[in-house]
Image 1 (cartoon, rainbow, N blue to C red):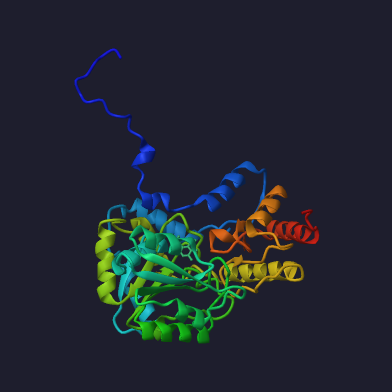
Image 2: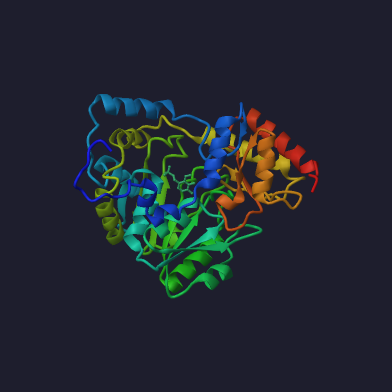
Length: 390
Ligand SMILES: Cc1ncc(COP(=O)(O)O)c(C=O)c1O
């Protein structure tokens, strides 16, 4: 060494040793593997993507651009701009019958899942959700020392009240519902929602109703919110409905006491939802220029195309919403094994174990062009018809 120092010698700083266990406990390798492979394949048929294939409607883009040029680029109030909050609150009151809910504009629905958990859960509290599940439901509770409790719904992915009831302990605090569902596409029926609401009331659970796919509902959307005026946080998002996943906008409504805590926590985390995007959302309220019905109709047709293309060869539920289906891997293969074979055939899917404690199924996203979807269906049919050697 050229220069001796009189400091006590220490080991070189090891960034890996600096990483907290809570970060290490999150395993994102399943999805990452698919993304890495997608980057390597040449023109793959990509049925792994969790966002619509359409772009943000022009009128919303124009409104966002106008907001930026008009200087709406600063922090907004933590809870969001009043011009947006008030009509959204009126909409929630109208659709749920709630009397006087609180409402917070969020940096994406993900922000709301996190803030609701941070506001409501203590270490050791248990959080119930249906398995297969959206990945955040499993990982976010762990960040605060709460305990995720997936409740198996195989093989039909319906809500089985007796299974939910059996999973409840004195520590159960929250129940998360997601309808239409990612990854199964299942939409909960009125009877299932009533059963869940009865359980929530009986056991004093706070229900987090993640309705980010509510626009992609191929029959009337139904929510648990009207059944639980005092103990539900309703989460809505713009990402999927308007193809603006990168813009980060959503909102949560619910009991004022809890929403107040979420606002306080947002102040110290996300600060506020992106300002120009909040102003752009006014377009949806103040004008009638944006009509998403043709987009949703196109997605209904894609759903039908997929189910009629695969129904005879795969064990597949008919999804009522979102843009996913969750078939069983054929030939007794695990979901991971089947997805590896699909990749060998230039088709990208997501193995079921990314969303589940089981590895028997796989997720198809039909949020793609009809041409790509047809190619994907063809590859899947070939894979199902060809019995792999042991
Ligand atoms: C069920 C569900 N909830 C929430 C989100 C998060 O959406 P965002 O944060 O873009 O609003 C997603 C995104 O894939 C999702 O599938």
